[in-house]
Length: 612
Image 1 (tube, helix red, strand yellow):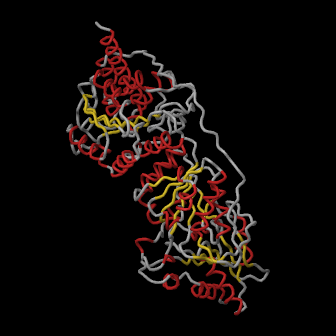
Image 2: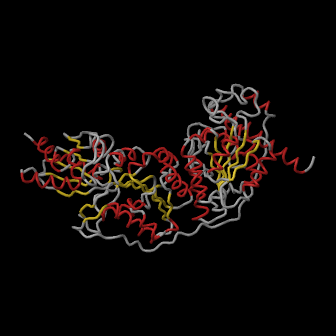
C-alpha cells in the first residue's frame, strides 16, 4: 500500500468515526439528524484533516478559516468533528440536545468555534458571503470560508442571492460544499442526484464548479486542493452522496430524516465500531486584527426651528461615526439615495457595501461582518425589511450586534401608497429577542441615537421619517436609550398623549388646541419604544388618569401595545390611535387625517376621554 493509499484509508476511517459519533449523539438525545450527518461525513473528514486551517485552542485567531454548516441540522456531524479535534470531550458530545448543554440541536455561537447560528435553511451560505467579504475587503486576511450546504436548501431564494453576491464580489476565498444526498425531509429533492443541474445553475452565476463522488476520498481531496487555487471567483464542490451512508437500514431511505436510528448499536457495529482518532488541523500563522482607529466624534448639529428629515440626520450621523471609528461599515439595499446612507458611501467607499435589492443578503452580510468584529449599520425602506425577517430572527439567535435603519415608515410617506409604507416594523422588531426599537422625531435626537446604537448589544432598530420635520431639541441634549421626553406638563393635566416620530408634532398641535378648551394635556415623546420608560408612563397615568397613544403604524404590536404592556398592572382609560384601514395614495397631511392619527383625531379622542 502506497503512502497515499494509506492516507486515504485513514481518512475513510475518520469519516466512519464521524458517522458513528453522529449516531451516538443522536441516540443519546433521542432525536436529531444522524442520516443527514452521515451523508457528509467523508466530505468533512477530508476537510478537517487536510485542508481546514484552524487553531481550536485559539478560536479568535484572525487567521483561522471559517466553517459554517448551512445545513445546520447536520449538527451531530459538526460536533463529531469538534470531538475528533479534541475541542470537546466525548462526554460533552453525548449531552447533545440536553438542558443547559452548549451542544444544541442546531449550532449556535455558544460554542467558540461557531460563528453564527444556523438551522433555518438557506442562511449559512449568505452569512458566509459576509465573512468572505470581510476577508477580502475589510480584514484583508488570507483565511478561507468553507460552507457545508444541503441540496434541499438550494430551493431557497436566499441561496441564489448569495451565489450572485459572491461571484459579483469575486470571493475566491469562499468554497461551498453542496451535499447532494437527493433526499429532503419528506422525500426526494427537486433535482435528485443530478449534480450537473446544480453545476449549470451555480456556474451560470459565475462560480467555478466541481462535481465529485462525495464518498471518494481521493476525489474529495483533489477537489478541495483545486478550489484553494482558484482565483477571482468562488468555488462550489457539488458532491453526490447517500443519506444515511454506511447503514443499510437507513441508507438512501425515505422517511428517515430527523430521526435517531432505531438500533444504534447495530448501526455502530455495521460502521465498524467506535474509533478514537484525533486530528490536529493545520494551524494558521498568528495574525493580528486591524486595530480600531478612533478619533473625536463630531455629530452633526441642527438649529431649533429648522426642518430636517430624520433620514437625513441618520445619513449625516453615521458618516460622522465613520469619520471617528474605523470599524463602522454600512450596507445598502439599493436605496441609499433615499435612506441617505449614500453620504457614508461618498466619505468611506472602502467600508460601504452595496447589496442591491437583496435584503436577505444584506442582513446576512452584516451578520457575517459583525462576527468578524466589525460594526455594521444596514438601511433600506422599513417595508422591505419584512423580506429579511427570518434572517433578523436568526441573527438574534446568533446574539448578533446589528444596527438596522428603516426609512419611509408609515402613511406619512404620502403618495407612494401602501406597498412602500412600513406599517408593521415596530411590532416586528419589538418581537425580536434582546432588541432595541427607537423612533426619533427630530434631527438632533436622531444623531444621538445613531451614535448610541454603535455600542448597543443585540439588534437595534431605528425608524426614520421621509419628510422634513421641525428640529425641537438642542444639539447638546441627551437621549438615553430607554428614556423619553415630556414635552408638555402641568399639575392640571387631564390627559396624557404618548407619541413618537411623526406623530409627536401632531400631539403638540393637539395639546395647543386642547388648551383653548381648558383641557391641559401632557405630551410624551416616547422615542425609545423598547426598552420603554416605564416610570414616566406610570407617573403620567397616575397624574392624569387618561391616556392616548398615537402612532403611524398598524394598531397591533407598535407603540400603543408597548405602552399597554408597560402599564399592565393597571392601565388607565386609554385610547389607541393607529392606522386601521388600508391606505391609498394621498399627500402626507391627507394620509394622517384619513388614518385618524392627526391633531384633529387626537383632540377628538381627548375630548371623549375627558368628557364628564
